[in-house]
Length: 283
Image (cartoon, rainbow, N blue to C red; front, side, top):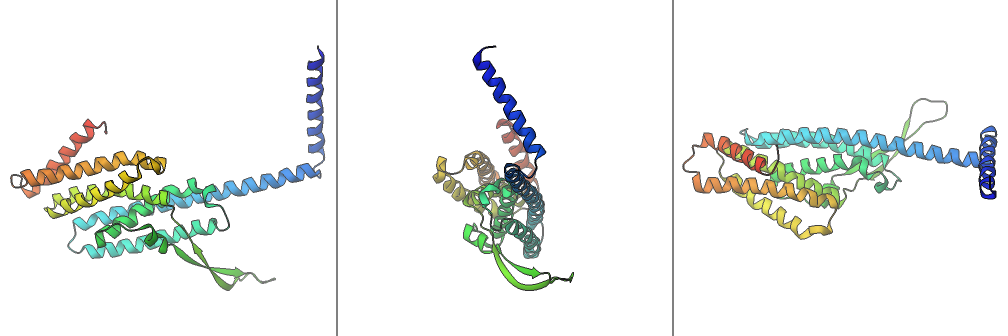
């Protein structure tokens, strides 16, 4: 054994002996410091998992709201469906309030990946409802203005199991611009489905309005280009597919609308969209 190998073995033995000393002496300051680190990491991981669960609930309830809103093309009173969606979205906002409470005093970007899927789905649902009611796109400021929550602070007196309310604290949740853009990109798919449903019910005007609206959204995303978040460029392809399907439906209505009976329009467009998906490699 040469001199260098001997020094390496001695260093390893010294490190092993030091580890044994630390484990045998839990009151060591080094062990105490690492126990603090362990507690901080465990607390962060627990908070992350709680945020994932809340985000999953937000996603599920937002999807149910979107499914509900698609009924507006089949009912005589769309406002009743929209009002029912308001109730569901209020429940979703209460869950987002739990996210805001978990993030109190925390860096939002440390936990962003935990709740971003739910927030994107919420943006999609609330923007879909806003379009049905106002025929325009909701802004990021309007979304954030509804995410203000009042949380009552409680105090537990000594010797009593009853908590007393001592005041209220205002909590706010700010949807990031990236989550807003990704939610709007997903909205285009729902508008495409709304277009096909409208045609099936004999509504020939809605597809042309949706086509113009989707072109405006597409133009806005085109201005962003490669300067925005990476996920935006990936969803731009899906946005173009949705716009292409709506434009194809408008073209068929304009050229062959008088030839096809209204009750057969939905079947014709469904078969055309299936053919387009097959050519694009979508199964």
